[in-house]
Image 1 (cartoon, one colour):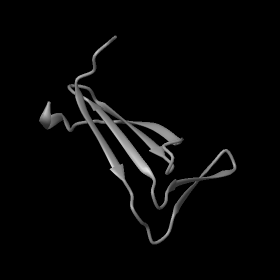
Image 2: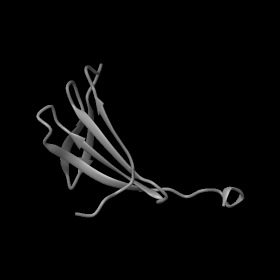
Image 3: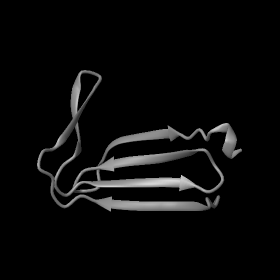
Image 4: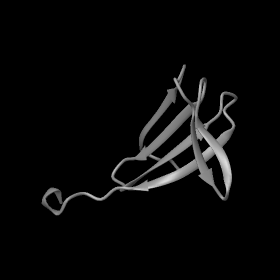
Length: 75
């Protein structure tokens, strides 16, 4: 089994004033609501992170990848 070194964080959202809804393929997708979870995976020495937005039963709602670009002065 391959090993990935890095960071993993799980955010559990207890309550929100208003749920957040994204439009995707002409459908409404709730990505933030009471009891939802966001899992973020950031591999060490890589330039991306993965975020998985899950409902209160840990069912995946959205999964996306952010690409990270550092300013040239940091390289």
